[in-house]
Amino acid sequence: MHAISIANSDFSLGKDAPLAVIAGCNVLESLDESLAIGRALKTICADLGLPYVFKASFDKANRSSIASFRGPGLQEGLKMLAQIKAELDVPICTDIHEPDQAMQVAALAEIIQLPAFLCRQTDLVTAMAQAAKRHDNIIHVKKAQFLAPWDCKNIVSKIRETFADAKIALCERGSSFGYNNLIVDPLSVPEMQKLGVPVTIDATHAVQLPGADPRTGGASTGGRRDGVAIVAKAAVAAGADGVFLEFHSDPDAALCDAPSCLPISAAGPLLSQLSKIRAIVAPV
Image (cartoon, rainbow, N blue to C red; front, side):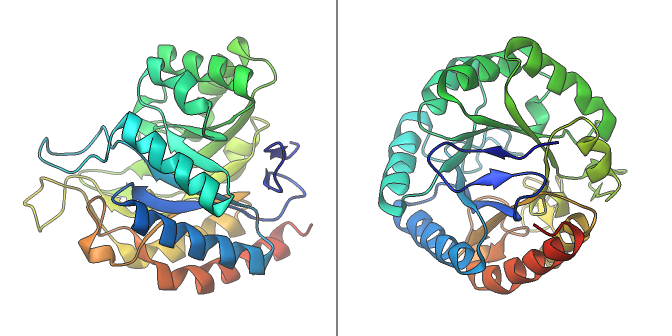
C-alpha cells in the first residue's frame, strides 16, 4: 500500500507518511466559527509536522429529525468552503450526497467524502469516481455501520472499475451493536488495509449513540465525548494512517452531534499523543 497525496500540497496519507489529520467542524454553522477552528488546527498540525485537511459538511442529509439543523446547503456551503480554503491556504474535505453534486464539489474539495449510509449507492459511488478522475481528488469512503470491514472490497471495486487509478482511503467509524450503540473493532483497521488502501479512523462519529440523545427524547443522536480520544488512540495503535476529528468552540452548543465533538482546546494535546503513537507503530 503506497501513500496517496494531494497535488501541490504536503498532504499525504498511508504507509511511510506521518499521521494525516482530516479535521474541522461537523457542519458549517458560520464562517467565523469554521475559520477559527481551521486556523487553530492548521497551526497545531504545522507545529507537530502533521499533514492537514480542513473538513466541514455543507449539508447533513441524514439528520434524525426533519427539524434538525442541516447546514447552509450546496451553493452557500461551497462559497464558505472556498473562502476557508483561500484564507487558510488548506485543502478541503467535504461530503457528497447525490450524484449530480459530484463534479461541482470535486472542483473545490481535494478530498471528496462518501457518507457511511450512502456507501453502497452505486450511482453515487461511480459519479464520485468520475469526478475524481477529472479533478484528481482523493475519495474518502466511510465504512457503513452495517458492513464488515472486508465488505468494503465491493466499494473499492466499484470505484476502480470506474477509475482504475483512483486514490481511495477507507474510514472506520464504528459498527452497529444492538440498539442505539456503536462499537469499534481495532482489527478492522488492518483488515481494510489488506484491500490495498490507507485507512483512517473517524473517532468522532464512532462514539455516537444513534437516536439516543436524552436532550431531545431520541430526536437526535447522542454520544460519548470522553470516548473520542480512547477510540482515536486505539485505532492509531492498530495502524490507522489518519484521523478524522470534529471540534467546536462550545461543543454543547454545536448544532449537530454536540455530544460527540471535542472542544478545540483538546486538539493540541490529543494530536500530540496520536502523533507519538504513530511514530512508534509506523515510524517514517
